[in-house]
Amino acid sequence: MTITESYPPPATVGSELPSVVDRASAARFVDEYVVPYADDYDRAGRVPEALLATIADAGLWAPFLPVEYGGSGVDMVALGEIHEEVGRGCSSVRSLLTVHTMVCWAVQRWGSRAQREHWLPRLARGAALGAFCLTEAQAGSDTSRIATTARRRDGAWVLNGGKKWITGGQRADVFLVFARTERGVGAFLVPREAPGVHVNPVTEVLGTRASLLGDVVLRDAVAGPDALLGPDGFASGMVMTGVLDLGRYSVAAGSVGIIQGCLDACASYTSQRSVSTGALRDLQLVRAKISDMVTDVRAGRLLYQRAGELRDAGDEDTLMATFVAKYFASRAAARHASEAVQIHGAIGCSPAHPVARYYRDAKVMEIIEGSSEIQQLTIAADAYRGVAAA
Amino acid sequence: MNEHIARQIREFITDRYPQTSISDDDDIFSLGFINSLFAMELVMFIERTFDISIPNTDLQIGHFRTVNAMKALVKSQVVVTSRA
Image (cartoon, rainbow over all chains, first blue to last red; front, side, top):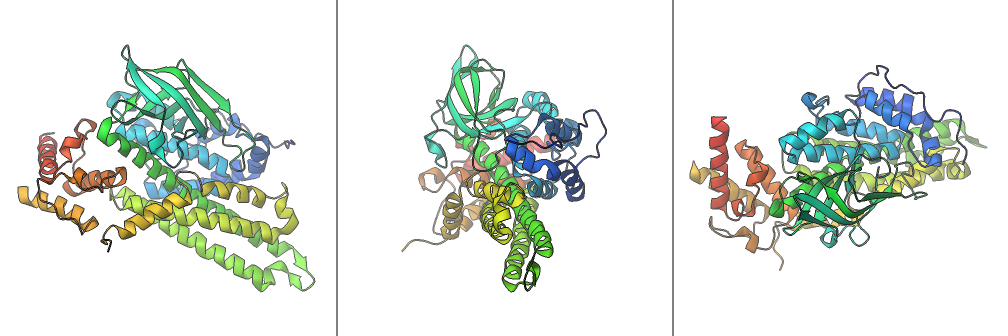
C-alpha cells in the first residue's frame, strides 16, 4: 500500500471554513478536500480523522438539521445536491454522510425532547458520529429475520446480537440499532462506549473501501432506559421505513455524483488521448457513451430532486419517488462506471485513475439501502396497487 | 367536519387500493395490504392533509385500525394544536 505525501489532507482543525449549505459550496469543498485524496483513502482503506474533522468544520455532517441544534436548516433538495457533490468526489465519504444523516434524521423525527437535546447538537457538529445498524448475518433485504434482541432488565435495555457491514462502524460514536422487542422491532440508540459493544473492522471489500466498515457485536450490551427511539410496536416499522427512505435518497444522489464523476473523467481523458485517426473524443462510439452519461446524469438528478421536493412538502409520494430515483441512479451509475473503465482501457483498470474506484463503488450502490431487486419488487407492487388481479 | 375528515381518509385508502371497499368501521389491518410502507404513507398523508403532527405516543395501532379511529385521532390533534 502506497500512501502519497498528500495523505491525509491538510489539517484545518480550528480554522474557519465556509459552511457547506448548497451545491456550489459543496462542490468547492469536495474539489479542495476530497477529490485530490479520494484514491489515497481508497488504497488506505479508511477516511482519515483529519478529513472527518474538516467535514465538521464545514458543517457538512448534518446541514439539514435546524439551526437551533447546530445545523444550517437546508432543505432536502439542497441536501441531495450536497450529497451528489460528495458522491462525485468519494463514495466512501458520502456513505459516512449517509448513515450519519439517517441517524440524525431518526433522532430529529422520532426522538424525545431529551434525546434530541442530548444527541442532535453533538451529531450536528460531528462531535458524535452515527451509524445505522440493521443488517445481520441472516437478515439483509429481509428484515423480518432480524434476530438481535432488546430486553428490559433492571430499567435498562439489554441488547444481544450481531450487526454486519456497518458503514462507519469502526468510528461511530452512537449506533442506531434495530432489535426485536417483545412487541416488534424497535430502534435503539446505543453509545459505542456502552458495556457489551464490540466492533470488528471489515476491510478489503469491493467498494466504498474507505467507509470504515465494521461488524458490531452486542453481547449483553447495556443501553440506557431511554435508548428506545420512537414508538414501539405497530409504528416501530415506520422508523426503519423512514430512515431507509432517507438513506435511499442519499444513495440516489450519490449515485448521480458517480455518473457525473465518470462523465468528467471520460470527457477529460478522451480529449487528451489520441488514436491514429485523431482524438478519442471524435470517435462516434465514444460519443455515444458520453451522450448516455449526460442523459442519465440529468435524468437521475431530476428524479432525486423531485423526491426531495416531495419530502420537503411532507408529501407521502416521496417514498415511491425515492425508490424510483435510487433504482434508476444506482443502476445507471454501475452501467456508466463500467463504460468509463471501458473508455479508459487498461489505465482504467489501474489505481492511477479514479474510474476503477467509481466502478467498484458503483456496484455497491446497487446493493445498499435495498438491493435493485427489492426496488423492483416495490416499484412493481406500487404499479399493481390499483389493479385487481384477474 | 367529521364526514369531511373521514371522506378524505377513506379516499386516500381507496385511491391506492381501488379494489377495496371499506366502511368507516372496517378493520383495515384485516384487509391484508397494510405494511410499513403504507403505514408510513398513511401517517404522512394524515399529517400533511390535516396539518398536524402525530406524537409518538399516539402512533398506536388502535388509532389507525379504522377510518373512524383515524378521524378521532385527527380531531384530538386538531384540538391540541389549536390550544397550543
